[in-house]
Length: 211
Image (cartoon, rainbow, N blue to C red; front, side, top):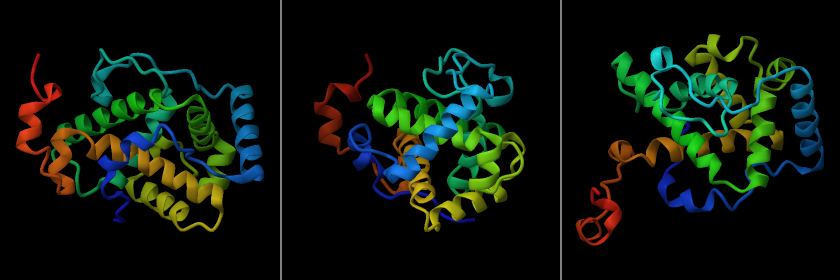
């Protein structure tokens, strides 16, 4: 399984809301806009998922999604096991909780982005969720809930190694927001080798103390 993790992710977090994710050029921008429009006209669900059942996904039923749609959630449920194959818990239930929590934090992070970056990500997600472009550009024939971890990993590798800027930048966007959401979560710091904030910071800064 390939390693799709980005090192020193926590250091990049403040920059994510200020930089463009998809620097695709005019052709890529036109393609993304066309796909997003086509997805909307075809009835592809891009409305935020709001609250969803926790029975199958292990998502916190109290959590209200503000950006990710149900299709987007299914996309990340397929991709995250490939991205973090060696870092996720082995026990099935804990694994589902870890994936669900990461998806919630992805949603929380995107809400903090600029409107321009949100629009870029919405077009990217629509491209991956719209069947014709998912097949043509991602090489994924099944819908995301049916995609195996091996197939998701193969897709990520194709986009990572692609000479097409749109696809390569799409890979960077997907992995960056996922890495920040996963490795930026305190219980996962040890997985990336980060020991946590120094003791003096824990003592001095109020955000490290319980209310």
